Length: 232
Image (tube, rainbow, N blue to C red; front, side, top):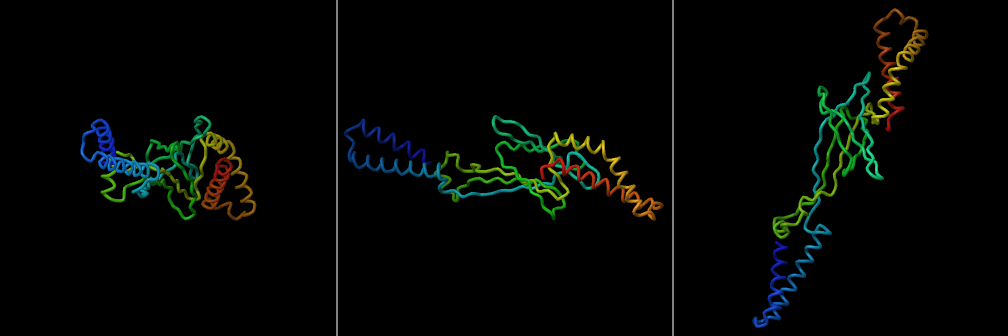
């Protein structure tokens, strides 16, 4: 609407300049100029200062699952660095369900990515928040029809909220961690289990206790390796 008003004022001023015999020419011209200046002021205020709008935030949350499963409760969020000119962006890879064979991705280009570790969190989640401008009333929406300020996005944020047993690890380091675990786990866990049985000789005949201890040692070694290669 404000664009139409501005155009009408401009056309009116041009016609007044071309047609000199219009009654009250000066008064009408003054009104048109004042109206044009007022409409342009409102247009600038809306475009540059988001006048007549308020910032609304909408959020959506979904549970995510690791791309690769490790022994114990150790889980990972994988990312890959992408060079974009002088900047480095990341692609985060995960699954939308535990049974899914397809991966989901989040690309950090144009959005803010936050990695949050929540000690009390049981499941990993991805929270997307969109901050956008919206007109506070119908009158402003009609007045500024044709201007892109309504629903204009100010900020996109994706937060990965992870339990403490999750590790954020690059694709390159994931390969290194996998090789490390494959190469050294059996030898390391066997030695630690041997030391355990020497300290607890009565457990040597207890297969259940031995299996439980072996699983715990495997879990701890896997965690130690992931900590070594992760960024959190």
